[in-house]
Length: 433
Image (cartoon, rainbow, N blue to C red; front, side):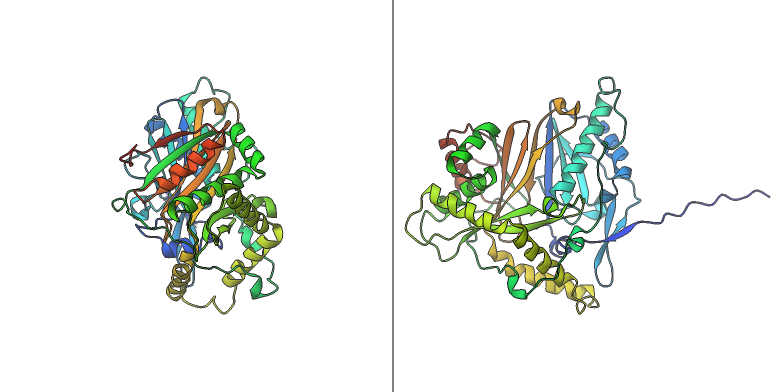
């Protein structure tokens, strides 16, 4: 009698959502996708078939991206996804659109391409910019090994040596019980940008290219860091163009995400960041650029300290770990989370995030021209900026739902007036461009 072979049963890995990720499934929608994009422009046209192969080779080695979102009785959670990898497609929509899980084999990321550009778009519950950049870099390496088999014959189809793909919840590991509730940051109503919007579903993109050495010199001359200089320039542009240089009862509050890994010795591929706000409240008739720059720089310096980040982290995690909240059904938790988010959404004017200085392994760097990052719109925030530096060029990318570009133009003009060469590129959404 012939023995029947048994099919190996798939036992999926599962994990809880990190403290930040808890919010995103609750508030995600077509209008507020919570999707960010990191892109790389190569020096050659992209072969879509090879990019698909590269993704399919990489995905089994990257558990952090091989997850799908499930809803339990009390919390959302991640479960390993054993479905076919998502389809790599030529780009045919605006950046940061909603990821429909049922149309994406339940994966929470997508890879697209256009001419020489590779785009990675990620639902923020999965990971932050650090984790997204790790995945994109490995995808580029694998793609180049396929597209240049002779030149890269000595390179193996495996992850980079020494790459750490830790999936710990660093929020929980770094948690310390807060001394008092009063220690936590408090949100106040900020200036909310309003204006004529583009048609629903459309988003405007404008890139500004800066030589890093010139930008360093300009920031040093003003007595601030590059990040403080860029955020301060953004705030000053909002003050002069949107508020027309007039006093305001509400502050301009530019949200700045801070990567916590360096503060807490973490290499997690899950989300691990905290939000601080670069605040400026115009109370007198006129402020100079230097005055606003100093106020913003001081605001950031006061908040980006280990002590303050401890307070923010501890406050956020303590709410999640409250034993009285744990047995509450998820549909009730969702109502509460959504209402708290909506109540605090008017505390932020805009966001500017800095992905940092991207480094590629040799010999791959010679094939890559630029990196970009883009943020989707969120409630009350219809203008956002993202910063990436690569190979001596820093790129600031603004995404907006507004037709008016006066704030962005003022931003680039300010920096240009400081002796920095600026090259600007848009996605042709501006009728004046």
